[in-house]
Length: 216
Image (cartoon, rainbow, N blue to C red; front, side, top):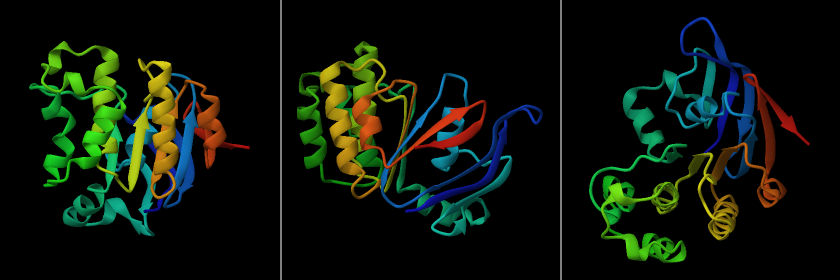
């Protein structure tokens, strides 16, 4: 799936623009890294790429079609292939297994093999029957990431995914994102400079005061 932003501007209040004339082409696979300080507009940009926010001005093209000009049924069909992992993980009431398997159940999947592999890999097996309200910040982060990875989406977008993770799990996540980027479009926004992430990036961008610039 190819996502292209054409002269995208975005404002929350109609006066101040958080994004200004953003033009970027994100082709069907690869690891795209957006770096920038807090408040630079990274989260807003990711939500536009994830087809959550409609830009105030400009177009979002998906496989050559203007996404926001499509009918609601076509938009929903495309959106099923896009997964966005929030900076602040969304965890629902219930136990950890309920939360980590939520994405698969919403998609009507009965195949949990890869999910179980991820649960074991990231070392959260012992938490599966724990109440989600007892989780630490790092554990909540892991649950949201595992839930997303298990879906194997065509487009995976992650906002500050390394926050609260220890070094071993950061390394695991880097390996998994790099592997996934071989067949899917992976977009990561971070202010956390990770040498391996930058080294494996297909494209590296910097977002400053709402303007996006590609780095060498």
